[in-house]
Length: 134
Image (cartoon, rainbow, N blue to C red; front, side, top):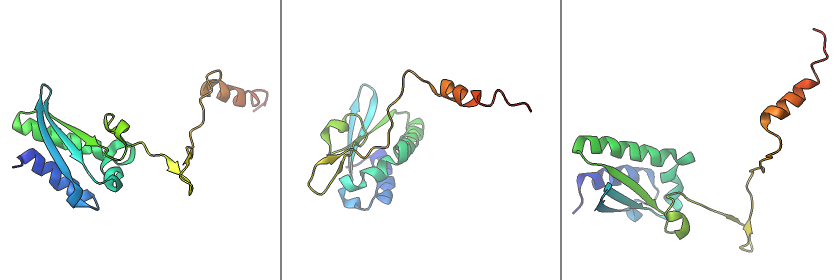
């Protein structure tokens, strides 16, 4: 038997995913309030989390509004069955693999240069224009 909060989250999530039959919501009551653990198909995990967690945050906001109406505090945990170590963090962590199955680092992140800040680099770039008479 599912409660109104489970039905609410289930309706929204099933509307977003490609495999609605894989959506499962477990409800637990703990010292912090009501914990809803959401499990979806691994292929749909990105849809539920969204870019920078926007969709997941929106779900939590809607749950907070429902909690205001029902005098309850709701927490949503998105479970990642495909990657168990990130399940506690509530976010997905995927590594790209090449055809042989080796993990490939395809990140576009550049290392942070601690010695030189953005401000100091900008000042150096602008210093060349200091001698111009305008």
